[in-house]
Image (cartoon, rainbow, N blue to C red; front, side):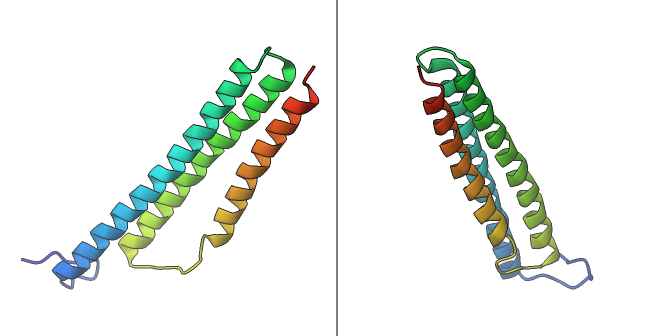
Length: 124
């Protein structure tokens, strides 16, 4: 017996395979968000700990990067769940999260630049 969708109609094997591929692609994208966020947090910890001397500037820069990395994990998780629900419901929004990705990348680059500026401004 073939699997049925929410309306009680049968789904084809090709539809099931496509849905599985979509879920796997969504999971890979989520893992990329988590990997990037973890790298930003590790960079923040390294800045806070391994700069020549632990100054207020290095701690502030480190905390900024850790906070941005943590928010990246949060955003990636929210995005993963939303896309997963869309896949299950058969919805596909073209470019629906394009603006959010641009904002996230701008925040990431801005935080790295701000951390560098803080480190250079507090350098003795």
